[in-house]
Length: 165
Length: 145
Image (cartoon, rainbow over all chains, first blue to last red; front, side, top):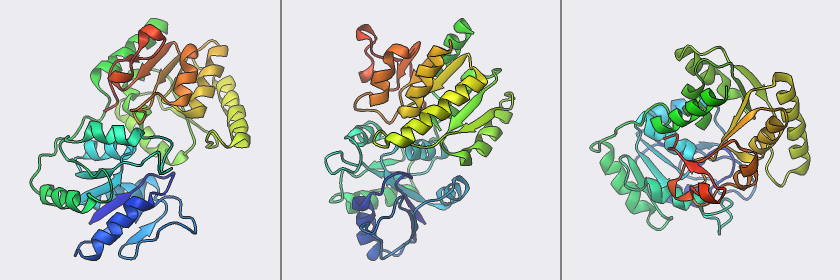
């Protein structure tokens, strides 16, 4: 199963449409969490979807999936890296009003090339990137990130709390 | 989620988590129990973005109430208007304030992060290229991942 998630704030039609078109010719189960569904929102024809999932349900879908497809949101990236799930991300663009600026483009650039992360810059390259991602699902190394922040950051925070406590 | 990843920093402290979503409380409880932390207290407030003026006002009052009620020694936030309110109010009540700008802000500091700089006793970004402590900008000490 492939789990598609776009966070729980804004819809991301460009990604959902790309997945929908791709999945039309595939024999693979896809499930989508699409966030806010307005009358204008794109509705997938080829897979099941909901607007919102509670944390437990979300975790369940995440665990069941062999690949996660998502916007370049840090929440999904952190969850995927800490659970060792392969992740395909497509960044939202500020210019297209998909989010307030191009911060997801910078995020995608930063995580591009990290083990278990595949970046599709836009919908035109999506079919190629998902092909690579699915081929790598069973072969790639998947080192999980630590459960907590980088030790240097924790030390800085502890130090500050101790000095001022 | 980002606060939870820095939660070992407050081992041994009494902690109040204030968020817009109560669904995450169970997970935070479990994680704090795993680390033998004192059982945290939870508070919620309404979600609001920068264009929702009335919701912002309600949020401000709720956060004011939470801080007056608990009188924290430290206020920690990773972002948004609510974090900005919490640091400003915390500062007024004599708390030490920590701003860890969200890791989502990879291109520039968040708007709330830029505005909060002079009220943050510890002012951090999670992106090395955004660090600018000599010009009043944030320090970089690492990221939540």
